[in-house]
Length: 257
Ligand SMILES: O=C(O)CCC(=O)C(=O)O
Image (spheres, rainbow, N blue to C red):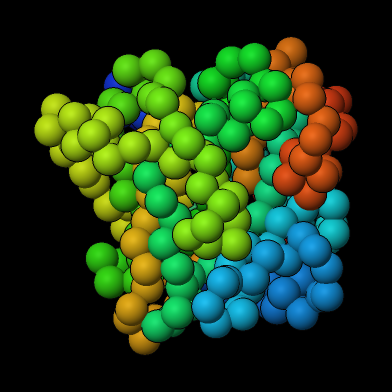
């Protein structure tokens, strides 16, 4: 799985790229099966929604499951990430974000580097967030919203919000969002299950509540160049992995074994 020149330019220009049909139905079913196992575990790495008590995000998955370690290092992820940022990448974070039917809550407007720099002391916004859609993601069930090109404006001011949800987040203020959207609009990242998505660390994004009867689950792996590793260690390893050695790709069939 390699990105062509147009796709490489697209991610540089827009800050994200959507890659349909990256994982097969069989592979997605395997992800779903393994997801059930990690969601049933009683651990602080499974963070629950404030109002419904269902799992919002299950974190540290590569540390908890060899299947998810293989998925994180799958060539369909790893090769494009290496094309964009070079071969020396470590696993910064893995998780599945669920937006359960009717109850899945908001992710406020933010960009990941605000957390990575502020809390983890990551020097530069070079990490890549790689997603796989585990469900079909439509306009109805809480797709991610991106502000295209917002990564080109430097780091927007943001404030820690510990109130809105159970996941503390550095949130971009409304005036900044208004200004950025006026310039560049908003897109929603939609696609069938098995679609992959890559976006850069300072792209402003968020997602709305899921009021539809359809669940929405997305696997996310954040890979960061080894020479851009964290310098502060306040957050637990399930939020920022401590193994800064370059990862090696898993086999292309690893999810089907
Ligand atoms: O899952 C979502 O809807 C948003 C997740 C997100 O923004 C993040 O993990 O940074």
